[in-house]
Length: 156
Image 1 (cartoon, rainbow, N blue to C red):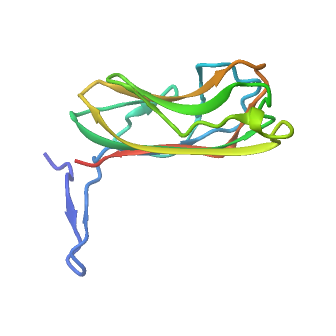
Image 2 (spheres, rainbow, N blue to C red):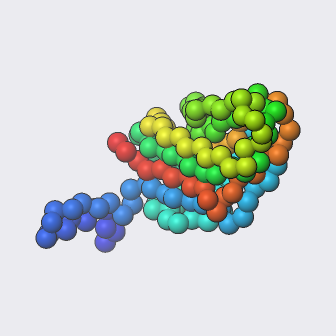
């Protein structure tokens, strides 16, 4: 057929692959009072090359290694929680971000940022999504989704 699978720029040799899985998503409104294991919502696609992202979840179209990353701002993290973290959940395993102990702080952190990156092994049809992890305390942390991004691409 006439589908373009690879494009090589004759002037500088840059190679692009229009069907290569890659996505960048964010949210349109905040997600309030996060409880442990709450799936983070991303309803705004900045781009979704190959259309592999839907309903807060990326689905790998082919087996390979996928670079997945999350960065987001959280407000009103509960000081009484034992710990907080971000988790990227794939069909094969859970990848946990650095963990914080908000009890070591003198007050509830008004603003906190989490970021995590992983090179994940995924099989065709495997899924990946992001969730909030918290032990103890109350469910009061808010994800400012307009200041949060989840992205990924097929690396190899």
